[in-house]
Image 1 (cartoon, rainbow, N blue to C red):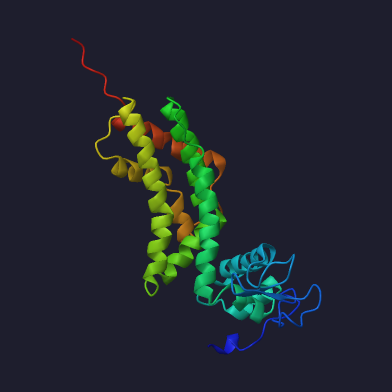
Image 2 (cartoon, rainbow, N blue to C red):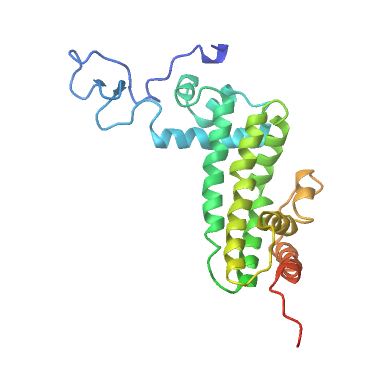
Length: 252
């Protein structure tokens, strides 16, 4: 147990979730829930299960990690920024690695769902790819995404599982979903692709060309404009369809 953790949770933060023997518990006090083996208060979330408190902690952690980076941030800093006691923070998360991963997962799942909702079975592939590419480049070069990528790259050497999970459930998952879309279009004769996973990686790389790296290395400190994103993506779509578009049979 770390020195930071040698503090009890603030009763106000835990909504008074202090164990009381069931045979002595007054009305409205915590009572033992023998089915789940936890102490709960009727009508209130069990310790560590209050979604509003969890959201409060996550938002505070996001601000701390963005401002300080992963290594410099401490659980003390996060508790202070989130406005909770250290004891309450540890009820929800055992350590900052767990909190950081949870923060990434929450945001990543939401963004991936929103992003791939833009892909449908519309036969107008150019419109679909352009719509997706613009949203993808906008997300990837946003302040939140750039900061997260910097932090993950900074810890991946000593926390390889974090780096692998970030890639497999983020960029890797996105490329797999795009490849499935390409498979559908190939079956319909609208694209000519031998390796749809390779094509997926190529297309997403084209959409961020010249936009992401300057942000990652702080050559520029602001997100690209919509006009800059649209220019890159439209050229990416042109190049992609020129190579992978349906082949026109030669004249007889």
